[in-house]
Length: 367
Image 1 (cartoon, rainbow, N blue to C red):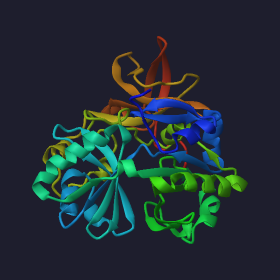
Image 2 (image 1 turned 45 degrees about the vertical axis):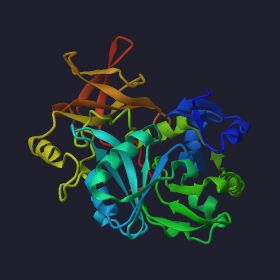
Image 3 (image 1 turned 90 degrees about the vertical axis):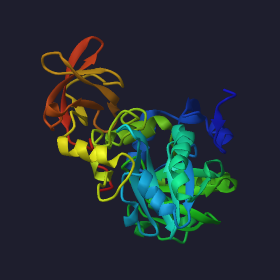
C-alpha cells in the first residue's frame, strides 16, 4: 500500500465505510454500500464521486492554442470561453495516448483534464511537442481535487451552495464562481454517467469543507457518496470508453468510434495517416452488444461469429443494473459492426448469443 498515492479525502472515505482498492496508482473508494444501490442512486436521484485522482494541466500563453491543436484530434479553435471539449491525444503509430477534456478558461488559458493512470505519460508527450511551441505548461494535478455530482437531482441538490444558476449551464459548459463559500471553483456541466450533473474543480485546501457541505445540502435529495464500481457500470450503460480497456495505444480513434472528435480540418499528430485510414475504411470497429439471454460478458472474453471463428474480444462488460441484462463493448470485424448483427461471446467454454446494438444502451438525460 505504501507506494499508492492517496486523494486528500482518503481518511474521510474510510470513515464513511468505503471499501478502498488500488486504482490507477491511487487508493480509491470502490463502493460505500453496494454497486447496485449506488448505481440506482445516480440514475434516479443524485450521488457524489471523489475523482480527485484525475490529472489537470494548465496551458497558457499565445502558443497554448497552437500546441493544443497540434497534440489533440478535436478542433480546439472552436472553443469559446466557458466551454469544454472531449478530445484525444493521437500517437504517431495510429493509436491513442489518452482521451481528455479541454477547457477554455479564458483567452490563451486552457485546462486539460487527463486520466489518472496517464498523468506522467501525457505530460511527457505534450512536453515533447511543446519544445516546438513554448507554451507555458503547469501540472496542477497534485493541487486540485475533483468531485462529480451526478444524477437528475444534481442541480437541485447543489443550488443552495452557489449563486450561479446551475440549471442554466449548458452541457459541456462551465462557470467559475463561488461555491460553498469558496471562490474560483470551476462548476462544469460534464460527467461520465449520462445521468446529468456537474464536475467541480476545487483547490485541495477547500476539498473537505466542500465535500461536507455537499453531503449536507444533498441529504434531502437522497444524495450519497458513490464509488468506482458504480461509476464503471454507469459509464458502460452510456457506451463511454474507458482508457486502457476500450481504447489504448493500439486502437485508432476511428476504430474506437471517436471519428466525431477527429477533425481533419487542421494538422495534428499523425493526421495524414488517420485521414488515409478514414478514406480506406477500418477493418475493425468498437461496438456495443446486448446479450440475447443469460450470461455476463467480461473484459478479454473472446467474440466469435456463427462459425465459431474469432472476430474480436470484449473490452468492457457487465450486468446492466438498469436493463438487468449483460452488456458489453468490444472490437469486431467491420462487416459485423452494424446494429442487429449476431455475434457470440465465449463465456466459460460456451458461445452465448448477443446482438450488436446502437449506443447508448440506456437513454441518459444528456443529449
